[in-house]
Length: 246
Image 1 (spheres, one colour):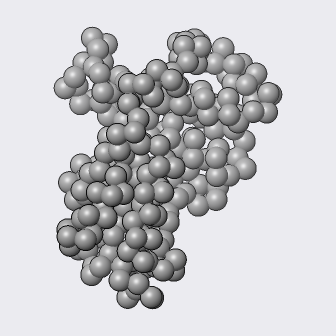
Image 2 (image 1 turned 120 degrees about the horizontal axis):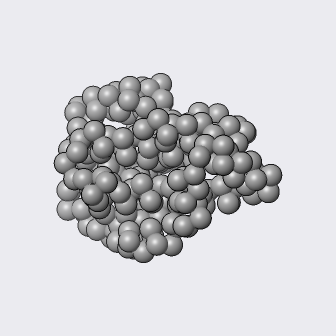
Image 3 (image 1 turned 90 degrees about the vertical axis):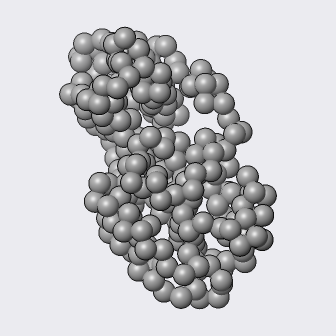
């Protein structure tokens, strides 16, 4: 994929905005940084965005800083780069602010959004980005690898039983198991969104929005646990309450 982008650069056909999806997070981020390196972009002209410490989403203030950053001339490069990792967990106000930036791209600027779940991004954002799908991973294979039936079956139990299960997992003090549970839930609900069933029919806008909300809450929970010292038990219990609400 990097070669494709290099050729676009050589032919003067680089877009101002890209959406990277379908590959591993590491592969997609490395490709974004690789493009910046190929264009000889100085480190100070590359700005990477992720949730701030203790936060579970990308805030509007972070997007405002992007806008200011892009308004400045490059320090020692031809381009200014912004890379937004886990772009699907931008707050609503953040996506609104980003939309204005995408509508009025400035000079030699390149903005790359990276996500595993492009369906969580507003269509207004997607329509202004050139989509780059990485094919290194089969989505069906990924789902099979990540979905654990035990983790799915626990969602079908009463709340008290789910909370007891969470407490048991937390006591093992192993975040890898927590992330395995969250990944199981993520791909299970994502499957319901992509492959409608009788219980979750296609064309049901209310049901679709519910599934999108659940996916976003799961992604926020993963982000919060990975970037902060928050109590995982509280995060998981709050997530379960959100899932039940939807």
